Amino acid sequence: MPTMLTDVFRGHPIHLPHSHQPDFTSLRELPDSYTWTLKDDLLFAAAPSPPATGENIPLIDLNHPDAANQIGCACRTWGAFQIANHGVPLELLQGIEFLTGSLFRLPVQRKLKAARSETGVSGYGVARISSFFNKQMWSEGFTIAGSPLNDFRKLWPKQLHLNYCDIVEEYEEQMQKLASKLMWLALNSLGVTEDDIKWASVDDSDLNWAQSALQLNHYPVCPQPDRAMGLAAHTDSTLLTILYQNNTAGLQVFRDDLGWITVPPIPGSLVVNVGDLFHILTNGLFKSVLHRARVNQTRSRLSVAFLWGPQSDTKISPVPKLVSPVGSPLYRSVTWTEYLRTKAVHFNKALSMIRNHKEEE
Ligand SMILES: C=C1C[C@]23C[C@H]1CC[C@H]2[C@@]12CCC[C@@](C)(C(=O)O1)[C@H]2[C@@H]3C(=O)O
Ligand SMILES: O=C(O)CCC(=O)C(=O)O
Ligand SMILES: [Fe+2]
Image (tube, rainbow, N blue to C red):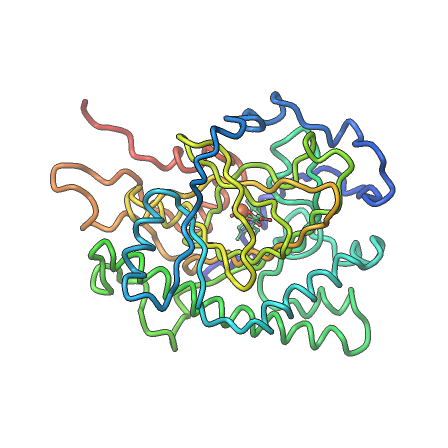
């Protein structure tokens, strides 16, 4: 039986800090457990804003005839870009934002009824990567893998949860099509076609080769944002992640030569991140982007990440065409399940764990 995303941590419980969620709204000062310093995250203060070059991830119009090349270029240099004219209806973006806001506005006791279990993927709780840090992150999250019906029923009695399930279903459907389209545009720019990848298809009426999870994030207003961390620096374990952010800035991407760059919210547009599996598939040509979320003193922030990858039992390895004729593949093959489990143990070292060792030098 193939494993499903929902089962990936069964038998691999992750011990998260107790979710004694503070009443974020009543705090005037940051508690010590939420105060980050350099030693809590080596990257915390990495390259404090360089001389402003104004450089940022590109905004790509999907209707532009050169969109594929622009996407390919962004995946190689930044590992991230924003997209306009993506075809996802504005009402649907507003719908998922409304759902996310109304979920996090529920009283904490209600949210905890749908708390994520130690071996589960779905539900309410702190970000999974929290287990790797001594300090707590200034955020709360809700993960959806598979149908949200069971969890939503606990959050919203009566009929309301059914409407919310419909929104999630519609959102995931649109995102799946978009993600597949983006993957093929990016691959085409490298000369890689359907013939080079056995497990995927370009036909968007058959997307069963892929699967996804939805991560809803809330970053409440914070009394001392400079010393707090919304979501610590990480790469996503996906092929691609499509992120919707509300109109409050907070997402930052890291570039070795520029440091942390804030990705400005552009109404109606979506942010796309290259994940670790896409990095592996392209033999490192596309960079999985290190990113994090900062918080704000006056405005709360919401984001919705659509985390997209292959079916759990699909072996992902570098496309032979992208491995130089004299070289060997940089990574050995992994399934998404294997990779998520490696990440659950080794976090930001996971990618190097599956890197092939140089045979001779
Ligand atoms: C399918 C996925 C991908 C997961 C794990 C599992 C469900 C939740 C995803 C996230 C969402 C928040 C950041 C991240 C780093 C985290 O802590 O949980 C992601 C992680 C990954 O991309 O590795
Ligand atoms: O909130 C954000 O902007 C980033 C969220 C994120 O990186 C994630 O959910 O994986
Ligand atoms: Fe992320």
